Image (cartoon, rainbow, N blue to C red; front, side, top):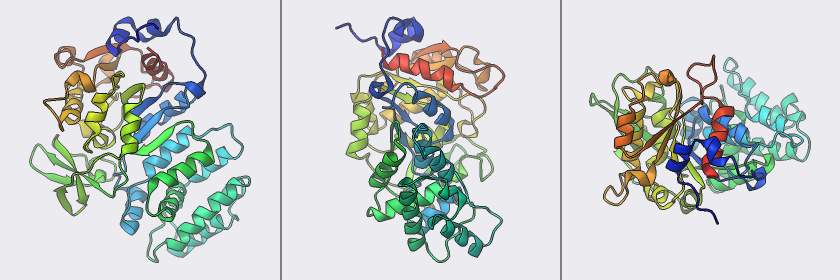
Length: 401
């Protein structure tokens, strides 16, 4: 059997050359490309990859503390389910009868300009199958969806705020509560319902929050205060990030990845740290103990795909600086045992590096022991956006190297 190319060797050859002579398998037997990402930046790439592999793995963050997730977390003391729902919908088999209608329903949000009574009536009509969005779903899928919405209504606190609520989040919450407050069975049920072409798991199934200390000494608790979406952008770079028990308690919490997540990491054919909000979507996934060791134990290629355009969370960080931060968190648990090259060996950058606001310092990447590989990742005319159709084949070639 021919020796498998290392990530750095593939990086030197170029993805197209490395995979040129190979016969590509069908998506059912496609590679297990594992992503650490909870944000929407990977949604289009996830949809593109479904054409080539039904075995991608998505480890997402359950720490969102803004939007409709905030209301659910406050009411039920639970992990956030929005990123899980978003990624499941991206992986749904769109050719399956009823799935486009389920995706449309689960992506729907209740209005923000209606009163509580009107919003509850609207949700109850959905649960009873009278709303057009639910009526459009064929049986037996419609019955499953209705049961979840009825289950949520039965458990909904009297003062729960339904304004802007995501229907998919409400349904997942009902599944979580019905399964003794466990996300795994709820995700499994919805994955089967939509025939998800990939695996989605939260990095942990615990009600925790993100906390950060900024370089200026200020401590911020809550993911929503770091993203610049619901609060002003941070005015000082992030010094360190950790997990906290509650929004009003920044005390660090020690928590480990579950055995199932560890197994998924150790069996992956490629590990990718993809574009997205740098701290809240990517680094947040790397905080639980045991994760760095699991990554280091897998000899597969480990690739960082930095985002293009401005990221308010990555204040003051160029591409090399981001790579250094990733390596630091991945080695934090055992810095004397885990080498940088055990957790990261390749950085994919666009040929035109002008898309990176803080630039690309190749010498610093090389000093870290990381090979920068330039290829076309951004489509012309879309500044700050990486192209899913360009990125997916590169990742596939690395996984099959």
